[in-house]
Image 1 (cartoon, rainbow, N blue to C red):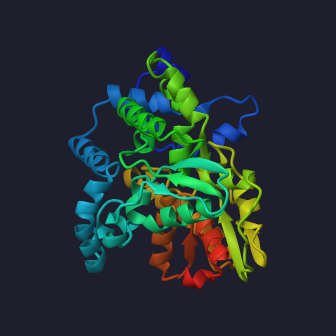
Image 2 (spheres, rainbow, N blue to C red):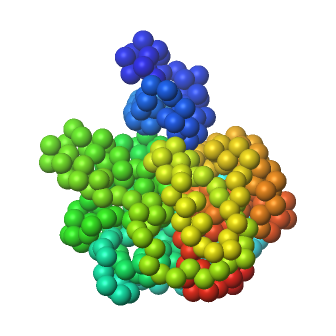
Image 3 (tube, rainbow, N blue to C red):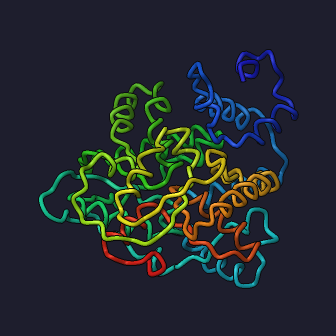
Length: 372
């Protein structure tokens, strides 16, 4: 990376392939004893690749398609009937990365989220929730569970209606200018909401949003605003773990394997909080996945651009998941959930993969996880 930046190493096809095949899982960040910010270095190098290297016509078209659809919930919703038809006909498995797409509940995804949700009992905080893009369309029930849990814990929840993509997919794929545009808009929307904290239930999004200070550091008009915004960003598990539990957790007879999403564990260093949160549920048994700090192969858009490598990595992950014997897996990132679900479907294995906040939501309501 130093050679590319300083111009002593040619940005040839070999170097480009090397960076394309990097997961960007950020395990190098936690592994480095010197604290080198490999996350920032990788993103800067990928930005250089995207601006200086001319890809094949197909790659240019395919990448343009991905970034024209996935950061825009309304566009995904318009395409949802076609995606669902492809799933029913089995066509999507022949499309690059298509096997990852689930059947989308169009009605649930299209239902607007009210802007304000009142706290139950005395208000402890006023928080904003990022509804997201993939999360909003493919996992709307996670947003609903997040709101219910936050309200039950005494938080007023604001969902800014005009808040769009956070730019994480763009940032992690070297599309820096696009990521900056998304970041500026999102900062503005949440500033208007006047919240104490910005809550995120997607590991990749939280990682990007906590980096807004670095992303916009060279922009005098936005640098201070970006730093202030980034200081408010909390993963939902991180935020709830900091609150003294108020809502009653009902006993749950369940065995749960916790999956460490890379952009939560490595990029944000949020490891113990989700585990601690789940352990507040009486009766729940939490088990660890062997080699659990290894990536599942999803890695943002990696599974779309490097499907063969992604699948190989993912197969190792699900072998380790199945080795736990747990019928439920907790995953704090939709990309990880989609990746593991797809590979489990290939095997004909039924395994419930849910967000940690969904498990907590079920415990607050007294539901079993097979009813959630």
